[in-house]
Length: 303
Image (cartoon, rainbow, N blue to C red):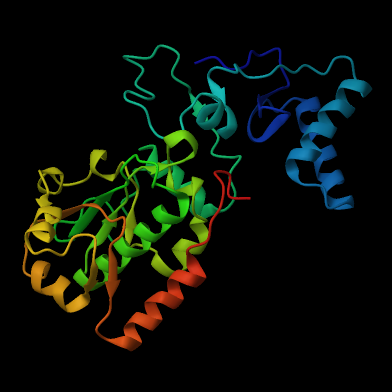
């Protein structure tokens, strides 16, 4: 892979509107070193961040020294978060994304920027199946963890508020049944499918419900065990059979119906209109307080 020739001092990545400070190919030439000395001086003398200082330093060197050699990395191979996820229409992962055998123009580097907070960046990488770290808790590969899934049906009633209410219900069900919630795809304007971060602030959600939910693409991840990926138990059918669908459902009734089911995944279908009433009033108040504090609306970039 040739990204910069020996005749260059530096080759930065383009960040949609300026040069990117997060990924740069640089050679240890006198002018390459001088670039970083200028950046250091700028950041030390002011509150300028690394990206702003990089762009100003590049302009300074180009003005000072005509022999300074720079070119931008290939814009189809090295992409910013805005170019890869937003401008190419990849708010959700597409089939065969980044498969070189099927896509000859597969990017080499995607910078996970144009989104705020570490939590949101990790969530986006997980959603796009770009995250392999399993962690000590076996985020993907646990042989014992149980899950529940639900859907957001495309309908005129699928407002943002109703989707947030369904998310709260799913988290309540997961809490009572000790199951992790596998999130559905969410719906934006004109019923366009979008990720959770288009609707909710990820960092706030993590502060109360960290490890209690998984991204919509979770079952596609190669580390998820095969028995988790099998056809889920139809919990929606069980609710209909017991006349409990679209009603206020007590925690006691929920436990009666599902606590002893051993299937790795329960599929509740749509949770629009379903409300969970905690029999333990104190537990219900605590959960509702968590929902009020930690499920906050936000836009895709999480600003």
